[in-house]
Length: 494
Image (tube, rainbow, N blue to C red; front, side):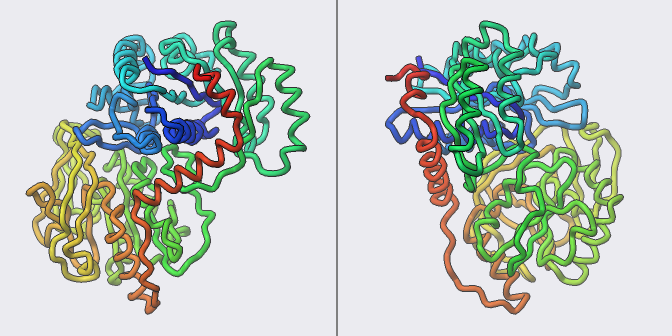
């Protein structure tokens, strides 16, 4: 059976996912066969495995850091919020059903066998499993039914380290307060603290660390600086979604839908030093970009209504009418059509008029499409014609089929046609369609030529090589910051 260590945090976005990924990479570098695990994830960013199962992207990122194929056992429960009080429950990679928060709370105990089976199965195949918690482990109102923090630590009989985010302030109070709310058994599991996202002189922090250790009787294992590393985010608190950006030669605006999903689809553009990638949620923020992308969403109909009410739909129609490029992915692709019909009540039922930039109609069905796919972009006319013949690889996650009435299919994948293109407007169901550097670089060149800008033909690193470099940067920084000898002792490897 595998050795285990669990990374919990005092709050969401404390850095659990990145610290987990860093430990995964370090253990892998040190020759241990390592896997990540998170019993329950709540996120709209998801991924489809090679065998067609859906899982959270954080564990996909961590699996990449381990140098292994993503496996749905690494994330047996995925909650995809459908509103403020409910989620679609994905169990072992398949849609289980929609539940309100109250329904799911009472059902949690029934999830334990699934979690245990997935964890034990992984444990038989790996040397070390790094478990990630969720949110805060000190939510005392939810403690009785916990299956993701100390409840998971108990299932796995795992030691725990707790990460605190000093960048937000209050790190000493949050760490000591978390310990205060643990019972004796839980306190015994906590073997160390990690101070994360530190900026400044560590020497000035030292007295506080000593006082924290005296108060909590828990050792501080290290102080990790604020790391500028380009690794896929999962959380809705992602800094990528803020508009603190540097204006560059090429401006790409992504519509920040209320139920935005899989925003990692566009990270590839951030790798290009000529591109500023912005997420916008109002006509004021939109400005005059070089290209607009409408992303995926967990609720196409409600987000289309929001797009209409916000005035962004009218701006997108005018933008496209002026000959500018618009691209939709998954739910954003569906919105670009003329109608969306929901006879099976997948998103509340009824029909709604689409944006109408593509001559196509979408009908929702209760069965979800979850598949990896590889395809070739068809011969195209208009702005996107330089993309013709480029190979793309990605995955589909959607509940619905689209019938194109006029215009061309964008690409051929698995012997089937996907997407639609008409002059300067295009869309596809494929998440990751831009991850091919040939696609991303070509789009940037298209936009530059339209502005009369000459860009050097400097080839960007392919996404896989780039990610590998980022994981090594992360691991190197965390290895230098933490007492890895003590970490290995906590794991049980001396």
